[in-house]
Amino acid sequence: MRRYRWLAVLPTLGLLGGIPFANRVQPYIAGLPFLLAWIVGWVVATSIIMGLIYRLDKRNDAAAEVAVSPVDHPIP
Image (cartoon, rainbow, N blue to C red; front, side, top):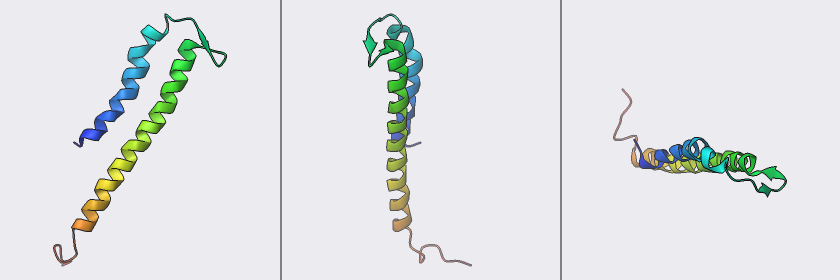
């Protein structure tokens, strides 16, 4: 398994692990209670992290396709 795929664990830890700590704080951010702002922030961060994983995965797959030439694998 590629190491960068472990980035997918971050949103889970942020959402599930951080809620008990974020729930104790009472300020408002952009008119939202802190807990709701925390969840919205992690939803946005999840999209960014998944996009990063996708980009990293595409780079490695494209490099593997370039490295394999048709001469190495002839079609029977």
